Amino acid sequence: AVSGFQPVILTLHRPIAWSGVVLLVVPLFSLVNAAHPELVWLEWFRLLCMVAAMFALMSLQSDHLIRIWVFVLSLQVLIQATLAGAQYGLKRSLGLGMFGEEALVAQNIGHVVNRATGTIGHPNILSYFFEILLPVMFALALARQPAGRRLWYAVVCVAGIGGILTTLSRGSWLTLPVSFLAVFALTYGGRIVRVKAMVGAFIVGCGLLAALYFAYPTIEKRFTHTDYKSAQSRMPLNRAAWSIIEQFPVTGVGLNNFAETFKRHDTTGYSRIFRGYRHVVHNLHLWIWTETGTVGLLAFLAPFVVTIWVALRHAPRAPPVPRAIMVGIAAGLFAHLMHGMVDPGFRVSLTVSFLIFTSMGVVGALAL
Image 1 (cartoon, rainbow, N blue to C red):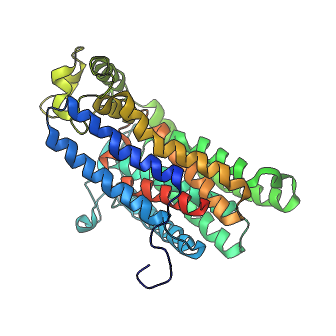
Image 2 (tube, one colour):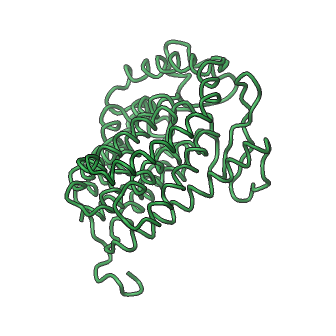
């Protein structure tokens, strides 16, 4: 807009934009019960920045600019996958702390392995990054466009699958079959009956099966070997969070106040699993519900639901590449909501939060 390429600086897709406004307004009701109002305002400012980023991407009025944005994201997927593979293979950090690299997380799956972090953060956060973007890369690998571009996104997708495997995140692994099947069905549709499309699908399928063959031993051990009660602790914590929801069902205990008030309001005693430190429940939806109540949970879900609805509504009438981008983003957002049932999700990472909300803005721009 500054250079004069866009005559209008701000253009908004109304349903998605209004969902962002609702997200900014409704969580403020949680101030009613907030023991620490300053924490509410701190998190609200973060939400404001994310919604602003959504509006900025939504105002891109050029299909070319959106394609550049997505291509840059594909570079990020390739870079993070390469770094994760190097960390996993070398079993040590790469000395990239100044770029955000964190210490690797040791995990025993019959033998000790180091879960990769890339430069995104904790292995689970890196897995969020991949689960959101891999459906987009897969969709663009299937889209009707020049063969060189399809090949690029196919290579990035395969590299990303390798990257998500190095995180050893079971939650993110379980999202891939759902998101990839949805992308395949919505991107290919009736094209699967065509010979050329069938050949392409067969090649892609063979590549995925080959990747699964080499990855299966690690996957099998991750799901069957002891996780030292990591999974078992989630249900007690969920019950503890639910006991608080029952006390503050409408407006919650205050946005960003969960860690400060968990043990104080928990009537089950299960929150004592966290000894000597404060933490949040390993469930994105219960975390939000506890802090902001039922109305706040609906407000947080609104941008996801509205964006997915807009993407699926406009995708069938869009050209191949924009259709692939919208379908891929919708699948990635849904995948993250799925993963949020067993992990705290995007709220623990500013990077992933901006990735999600800028993706919502891209859908709005394409829908416009």
